[in-house]
Each structure stands twice: as C-alpha cells, then as structure tokens.
Image (tube, rainbow, N blue to C red; front, top):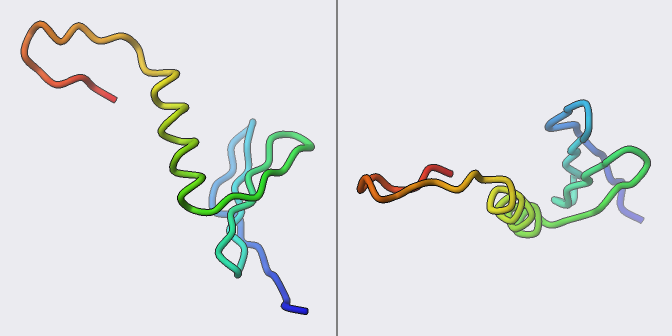
Length: 66
C-alpha cells in the first residue's frame, strides 16, 4: 500500500485545499472533502468564475474582465 502524504496548499475560512503526494487534490468545505484531479479543480474554478462574474457592459470595446 502506498503512503499518501498531504500538504495544505490553500486555506480560507470556508475552504481548505490539500495536495496529495499522488497528485490528487483534496478540497474541503466544512465536514465534506472532495477528491479531484488538477483538471477537475480547474474546471470547478472556471465554472465558479462564470457563475460569480458580474455582467460587464462590453459596448466600450474593452474585453470583459473575469
């Protein structure tokens, strides 16, 4: 059996992110922990960014801010 070691890579009041020695991320929200690959974490990050980004008026020619 492989020995898995976790290192905390981010900690906020509502969330903790740990990286396991096997490359899997453990993302904890309160008592719930979800195991995800780097691609999955990136996808969740992008989806949350889309959901939380304010509507931007792009009629001034500047690209939208994300």
